[in-house]
Figure (cartoon, rainbow, N blue to C red):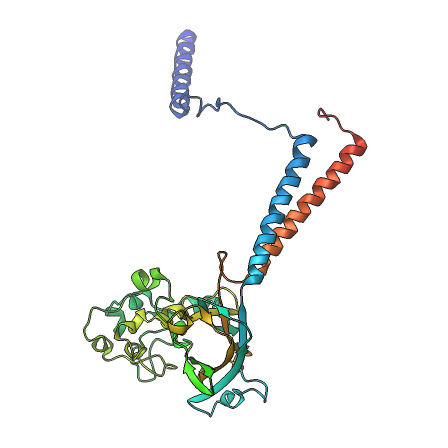
Length: 356
């Protein structure tokens, strides 16, 4: 009887052992050099003769790149003109009064030397948080893609700019569209006492992916019919299908100024491209002389402590002016060179062997 029990117990234990071995075999990686980690490897042996010259070479390279970036950045011409109108002496001071409508002010400035082209014309805002979470989600992507279903039933994410007081849907809805920048500018060069208008090119100022993929107008002709039974955003002077009265192809959700505004800024102080100066007598840039900037002052900023400005700038192979990038390379490169000298002094003084 005992022999039978022992034999049965040994059989069960043997079966369990075989099952366990089979499971381990099934989970075991293939017997290859890669899966079994038998690939050849190389481990650098860092010595003073490698580390010290390495730090010095890296530092010298960074310093060279930093000098090139810094000099290039300084060569870029930038002209900024604040037109907020806070000071009583500002030509735009009267326009800051909320009771003044359709206010126009003129800012005069002069350029001493040729402002090399192509010249980029930006508007800038300060203390404006486009990166706020609730502000950033306050739009209807389906509506902006041209889906007519969402024209009559905007997304709830657009609230409180989803419907007007008469319960009519707002198109385009949301805080971003409702707060679209609406100051306009006309630039004149003063030649022999007369104003010569500088042509401003507003084509292609938005990202290609925005006006070709992300934003679409409804397939309705004329475009105005797509907006039947809807209302424009509360702060807009004109509906979306009349954003550009001079170019019928630049209306609706593919309007260049609208697309530039809808691409939110990451920081509270930012600038956005308004126009380019590349045509006619100004293809080579803005000649030295006196200029007048006519501003249709519409956008309020004093209520939240903001400021407005216009910026004229040209670019180089590294883009716009950015002193920080060159300074960062110079600082890191200098630190590497200093560290290499410190390590050289320590090594020369203590003479550590390679084994240590």
